[in-house]
Length: 260
Image 1 (cartoon, rainbow, N blue to C red):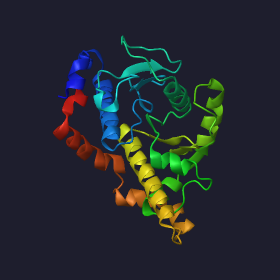
Image 2: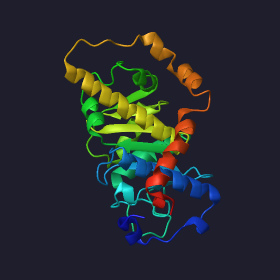
Image 3: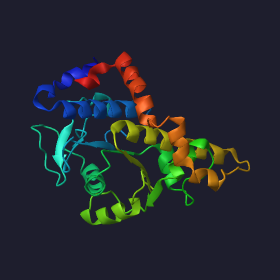
């Protein structure tokens, strides 16, 4: 175990929460570690949340101040939609994380996990007027369920919530203009895979535009059938279900302390 993780000395919550909540805690802690692994983290300034199983108004979020490669299942903070901490914990919650995530969790009951990043490539594309371009195979899956929300400053004001929710609608990918990327899904695994695709799409676009040559766009008819194509390629299981076990094995080989 890394010295940073052991030095935190956070008692295990495994025996004090339900088995279902513990599993979500483990998956969410794994998602934070993987965000750090892929270098999508922004020190401590982004956030991933997951709904507590069996509830509509409780979710788990990162302890504000811990680096993502330090986060464990027991260190995650349980809060309600009003931002009240429901755990006995010394850690605070990122106020911007609460504003964005509480708005989406409150409006989208299918959003069991919401993942938000401030990656360089994601922000670069969010600042481009045309947004995501149909330049890659990966882009068709993003474009088939993509929404945009204009920048209103650091997300601290409750009055922004209705506009954010309205802009998102029923989509699963949200580009926050001049800010970053957001994905949501029915599980931590699905939200993470969506972010992997979103970040990949933005990286490809930045590199393609930097190349300076004439670009070839994907036919819009292909984008229209992206959902059906995704079901076929994953044999109906969903990409998250296929990739998540392997990602957990990768973490377990390097540092399994996220499970604590």
